[in-house]
Length: 219
Image (cartoon, rainbow, N blue to C red; front, side, top):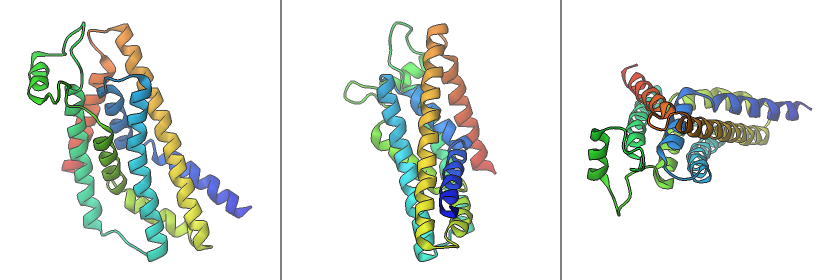
């Protein structure tokens, strides 16, 4: 019974960790900056999640099996890197829009698009770069510190219980990320229908990601 309780708690902690600000900002950027269908944008979001969750599972198991610790300076440095990725994603989100009936959001963005075109397509989010960003976010923004505390408690009774707890924590994260992605896709699409000339949620996501990224860099 205690083991079942540990797994349930681990899933709940994973669900909670999935709604951290940097995760919300990243998924809002991915779902708003991609020009594909809902299914395509959800797949991109899951590539971000898979990169993040893979690192979480590897880090958690390494802490349990090898008694790894994360230096404070490394945790702080990776927080800065996370900030840079959020700024990068906010810019990439603006550049990812294709020219259609409503045109570009501004002449400046149109010029960026022309400079960054690759094989006739805008330079935007891909499976590779969102997976890489997911990996970075899994390493940084205080994740190792939180994971160290969690795995210490989870592995106190038995090592294999700790490994299962880390897996459950990762599953909770995946569920949380999928829900955020679905909600974000819905909000972006609704905003286009209400005011197609001004996709408010996209601008809001871009600003949120940029400001949050700057805050990580200066803290």
